[in-house]
Image: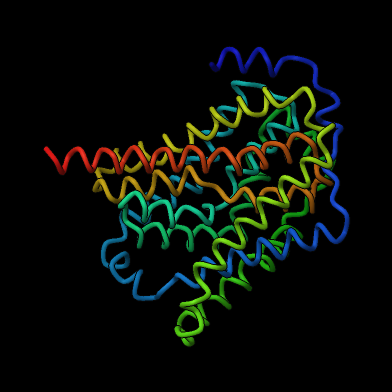
Length: 315
């Protein structure tokens, strides 16, 4: 599989690097609002009490954060070097890896009977830290990549500007949601499920509309993009699982960390691509395909774990 992808990525793809995923001003504002809504919905599920156990036994949380913030970007960098995809695709891979855990990770961990408290803590920690870790990880690893570095320099990315954007769409709604959950629990309770469903549906619709209106950018490259996303995402799940296994964590903790590292915030990656890279073709397609594919793999993994639990219970 890796050999096939390497062969595909060596094919000339100048139009992919030159292509742009176009968003009109209203669409860009809507994308920001939808992502902020997703973060607000996550925050409604957060409780200070959920983290007390983790403070007394922080090793699982430390392993999860290291796997997400340190190991995944490093593994992605190695994969991008091995495959040598078009520069914009390599940059998209590094951006996705630099983003925090996705909003569906907590729900999936709950379904998988993993450590939901750990999952919530990891999502909160990596999302809050994303204000610094996302721009710094992207600048560091992309700056080392021989093909992505010139593209990054041509954009003249300012980490401070990215920090401001992430702060607005993540920190503010996250803080507001936690305050409402803590001080107005009766208001938060009926909002949780509808907000989760609404934000996911709206984001999915936006993604489909954007890709449909910019399909020419993807024409002829979907096989390459999908193949890279499949391998990249598999490595992300494997990174979380191996890190938790080598740390000798419990099965529930392993499930939580595996899902957390495999489910990335592709919405944030798409927003950064549009805001700071003018919707650069390869980056946008990687973020969009990842946003769909990681859910397919995540739910399949959840199903396999639940089936294994059922078989074990009958034995």
